[in-house]
Length: 319
Image 1: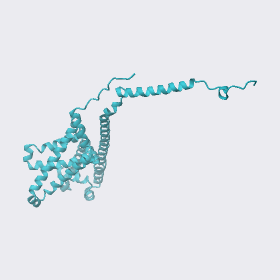
Image 2: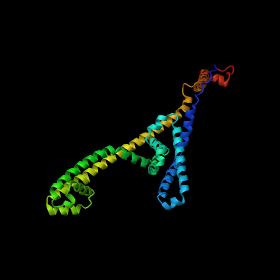
Image 3: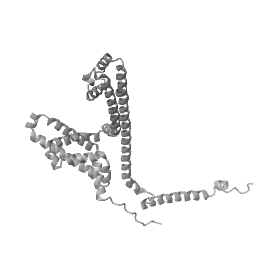
Image 4: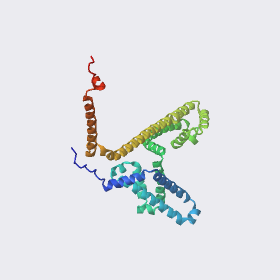
């Protein structure tokens, strides 16, 4: 029996989905990323060139044109990225880098900022940070620095408390004999802050020994806590944040791969079991298998030939 049921046509993509697919195919190409990265480098070079007053005086018009050209290129790049998320706009605003790019580019069009040359230069300088989007390792480091800020704040609070404590102890014991370094709480904090980098530690220890032999305990305990323990704690915080940033980068890559596979899934679903065309193909294969099985059974049902049928009838008179 022939199946006359017409196959159900696949749903055509909407205009928004078609636009997002085309723009996504464009923005994910390598040459697009290289072009945007080259524009970021060119913008950084322009900022450096504008620090030379002689060059600015001679090439003011060309530099202004190059600046507007970079802004136009960055605007087009941002619009393409927005169009690439036309079918899922929430994903665009969930990415912190997209929000950063949007703020940097749109701020250049605000009237108040465009009239302030200093703020405008700072915004143009912020465009250089967009290079982290195209350098995965730099992006990981920047994310790690951002994630380490809460731990760094705690480290600064503990360090400030330790610094104030030792500054007060130093003022009590050394203010009368060494007023240049411990004459007030401010001078004591500044002295101990410089000693945290081990700069001038030998001179400070020699000056303290002239006052009291117990000063070696003061300086040794301070250097041990401030220069070794706290610094190692800070390094541990940064390394932990770096590991978390790398894990986030891997999760983001996995999410992008899953999104791409999901986008390709409709094409593969055309041959799904519920598709009429796929069902007809499977029925045809089953019919061919049944025909082959029937032929095999018919051939097996034929009796094998007897010896008499192979050699013919026996001659008369034979036993």
